[in-house]
Length: 321
Image 1 (tube, rainbow, N blue to C red):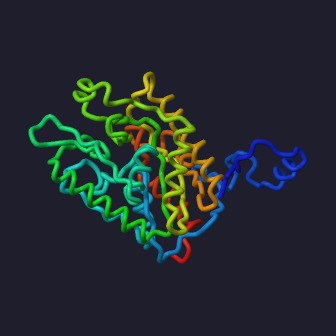
Image 2: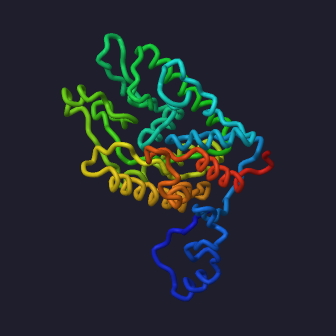
Image 3: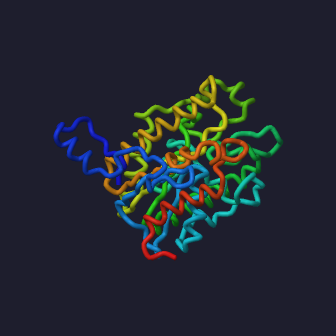
């Protein structure tokens, strides 16, 4: 499914004929069926379906957690939804630690399954005996190195077992800003401790990924996810904005650029791989304006998330409920 298939050029007569056949060619006004109570839900034509008895694996930002909840509510098996790291006292959901925000760290998680383990990313927290794991989403929560290694093992097993069982993978792309540990040769999911960055400036590099870099990372991830068996992939862009920018200037245009890059990449990947569909969650949420977000202007209101994810599932789920 491609809402607007990628092409460089088209014969004029063919373009006109295709346009006249396209019933969704006009941006919806308030009388359009796609418009519903100050929200636009773009038309969706799935390239595949998700069986009610199949297993779905989710990878990506916090929006992936929303997808999990909706899938579980519809009776679908979702291994990541049941991962519990609440013992680590990380703010948010019990499985918040699974959040991966940039394409680099998402790819590293998949590479772990195919025999390329990610080493490094564990740094002293400033408290004797405690460290932070910057490969995961912990909000900087420190713990013992033994627990970090144990938790990484648990997550690696989750990916191994979960992907082995999964017929479908949902990937939610979050942002393009990332930190690199140049000594370890890895992307980081969270910034290293500021004191460490200052004391080791040559070890760490901030990187704002461009279209070519992101396209390469996401394409490689799709290739790895489909090399051992046929899997369908739903690719989407998280509507949740970045909360802090390291790129300089105002966070608002920085977020706009970030989402634009990821949207271009999502279109490219969905066009280049037959097993990949793009779902317009980002477009749907943003049409609601600020009334779709909570008081922090960052987190999407739960009812709206539920509505949009269930709209997706209404089209993709086969034989559920």
